[in-house]
Image (cartoon, rainbow over the protein chains, first blue to last red):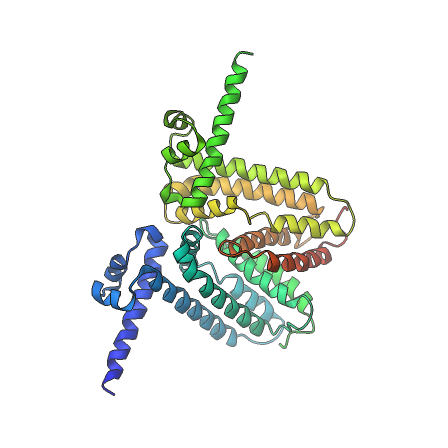
Length: 201
Length: 201
């Protein structure tokens, strides 16, 4: 019983460090960020930060994992509130195609970009991204009620997530929301036609 | 007549600087690169480099433009050699969805990523990307023989190019060619169905 509050404090500290890390990387880029900078932003002592995360890489790994999961949890929660019926697919497609338009994607992109020339960071990022990517795929299949045993459905769901990342990229330097809305509408119509008969809505 | 060879030399120097810039940025990232580093890689004196491109930004702007155009020229040339008939759409879709899987995209991504936190670079990149993006759209419409006056066609072509950039991202840290081939096949089938009656092949 005595250890509970301490464990909780520890979790809070980790969480604050992770959020500060993604904020700092998103704003200044990977090269502008050290564990000390992140600790300061999180309001945590440098020693405590280094106790939890000895390297920038370990902090980033935890961040990619935790924030990826948080994003998918949010997607699930929001989708659970959607009515069934014909408008459901468009709403779900809208959520998925908006997944990568926030500051989290901006930070992740900094990491991918650096990891493409930094082997150590790549070794951390690749397996994590694979795991988060598989989970995003699973959630999307579930929310669309898609039947992946039908030929082509698996690839269309993958394409939907790749499209989402491409739209994230298009939104990086300018606000692309209007154009994206039209693509959501058209892609929902296309998916609906291709998934026809497999949706459990 | 006397000035021709000099103009040509000048063009060659610019071209070498541009190619060296993209190589250097792709390998070391934006932060690891200066005009001096690029000049050395190009085998051009630092003075000559600074004569052509006073800043790193101006060099990069020229690079994005020239290499974007070169890539689309290549796409046009390769597509011109394609037979007409039902396999044409899949071949064109394959080319478009492979557009962003090379070292050029890796370098561009470094720039986008930096530009997202660097206002000066963003001011250079945004209008250029818009121009190169419009041109990529135009070429894709032309090669697919798509009729954009039909509702939804414009958005599907845009989605195809956003998907291509998303696939470029997925290919950044690992070789994603096998998965991408399957998406090409499925996306081509989807486009074929939606463009039906508009293809002039």
